[in-house]
Length: 214
Image (cartoon, rainbow, N blue to C red; front, side, top):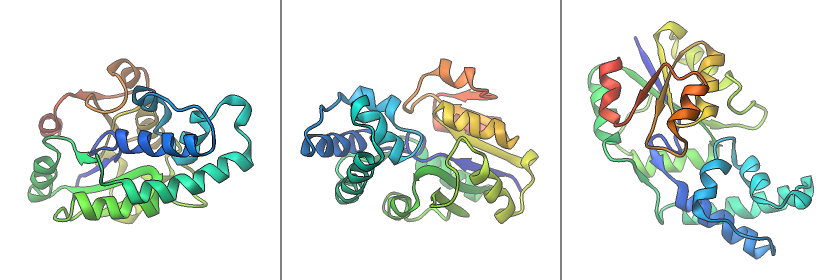
């Protein structure tokens, strides 16, 4: 069987405003400068700890400060995620088509695992994903290919039968490192040039275009 692994933020879900609003609220709470929403397109993608680190002024990026803001961020974000987050147009029909056509579908996200599961339950309650993985303690984040390798082993799929779909250089690098087909989406947080430079085998501009590649 063929497997399609999806990134989450910027690929299936538009989470940018809720991530940016939550991070800005915590920065303001601790007395640090906030950022325009556009800046968060470059801050996200490598996990929430890196998001906090990038959002802080350089002279404030100590382990203690990052850890304090990270704890506060998680509490705030988990209470506010329903404010603006939503699936991109065409995503739910695509996922339904893939499942009805017999494909395996899974999620591999750098968002911490405890935040991924409720998002899937809330925004995709009727989509039977075959596996959902966020970033887990003790596991390296993307672009390390471990999360893809784990998925392949769990679902018993060869890398030659796997497609990885994402919106950033982190995703393309992950796919390249794992030896699977890299598909970049242009509706997410990064631009086409970044996706090309990091090894995208295909680019798609609308969700339904994925079907023509498969």
